[in-house]
Image 1 (cartoon, rainbow, N blue to C red):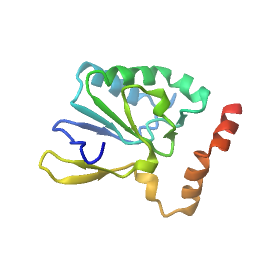
Image 2 (tube, rainbow, N blue to C red; image 1 turned 90 degrees about the horizontal axis):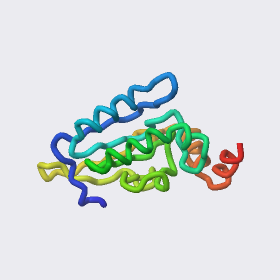
Image 3 (cartoon, rainbow, N blue to C red; image 1 turned 180 degrees about the vertical axis):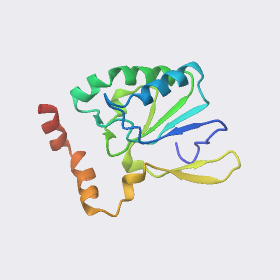
Image 4 (cartoon, rainbow, N blue to C red; image 1 turned 60 degrees about the vertical axis):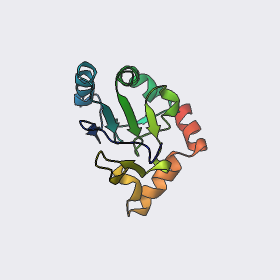
Length: 149
């Protein structure tokens, strides 16, 4: 995809919505986007308090979001940059382009021809504990454990 991805005029970017039962503005925003889609939608990670594609509980909890994002992706390009609260998402989507944390930063081009880098901001944190968490939480054994829970 990179560096062939060109960010179009009018593209929307949203990050760190941390949607939960207490905060639903992200769903309302997606309903607005469905009615009036931009040329591109960039979700820059941590859109949910926790959504792990390998853990059924969260997938069921956010199924209506997943379906709505798939529907939106039929009328505009949707790029989902995984964060530290939402990952292993590729299997959840057919039309949304998922960019795992391991493939970030992603080099893109602006309409002017200049290049830019896109990534979820927590990837390069100085906190070793956060880096350890990010590595462990994606470990297949940990994911099986969470699924079991």
